[in-house]
Image 1 (cartoon, helix red, strand yellow):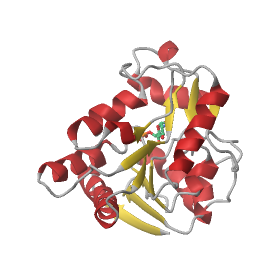
Image 2 (cartoon, rainbow, N blue to C red):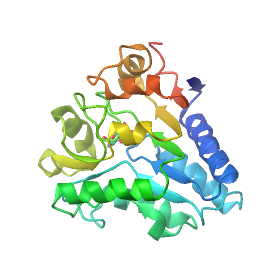
Image 3 (cartoon, protein in one colour):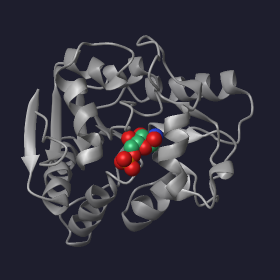
Length: 241
Ligand code: GLP
């Protein structure tokens, strides 16, 4: 595991965008596993900037996102599909037909999840998986207690996650209580993993994830068993390490 300490948000974004760019340059038809949340926004902004300068080409890239709220449509501003369009896809030359996010409008969980696993398999797996870190240690929406061997599945969101994510909604009642998420097994099968974290509120969780016992109580702790993980975090997130 390689850990980089970033000086600030901009530095963190540039470092992670550099790793993603290198992946695209070395394998133009790569499969990127992408994430939502506030952590990757700066990374996407940096990628867009480099694309506009002519340094990056997304035309052959495939993306497979980690998760989606169950019940939200793609044009709902809080859906992760909407987030990805707004923060990345609408600004680069990616073929939208090659961008995948779980189908939040599919009410049949088994169907939605089986289809998503099939998409991941059909594309030969993920070359580079970008991950944020939930305050309670979740990755994707794999909440504490999630079985490590799961593939894409439907989850009941932890109260702490509803609480953490309510800032994006008009009120707490509007936060969906369920989501479709890639499982830990899908994530661990990615060839490379890039974990980004910033801010003091992630410090305790990051320490547990990187150096604590490997336990479903801290889903991100499983990353200790992956052979190719890069962590980029700012000083506050690394303050307890
Ligand atoms: C959501 C997403 C996660 C993300 C987490 C952290 O719960 N499902 O994939 O890592 O938020 O978000 P933030 O980066 O805003 O702290």
